[in-house]
Length: 96
Image 1 (cartoon, rainbow, N blue to C red):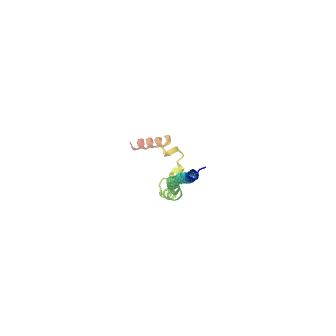
Image 2 (image 1 turned 90 degrees about the horizontal axis):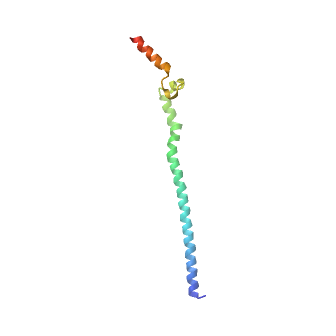
């Protein structure tokens, strides 16, 4: 084999190996960056809800006037029942 051809072949082989190494490093960095962004966005979106549940929620519930009546009211969503409507009608009739 010609010495010039051998040198060019070795140089091309070295460039291909270096190119392969760089491409693998770029791909690895892309993958690490992708998962890092996912973790960061999960933290950014979930952390406020967690902090609200752990710290702010109990404070608001303590000062809320409906905290004791919400547990005593058996109906769903705090909507008035038929008994509440009947009491309202009776109080209206009593005024007249």
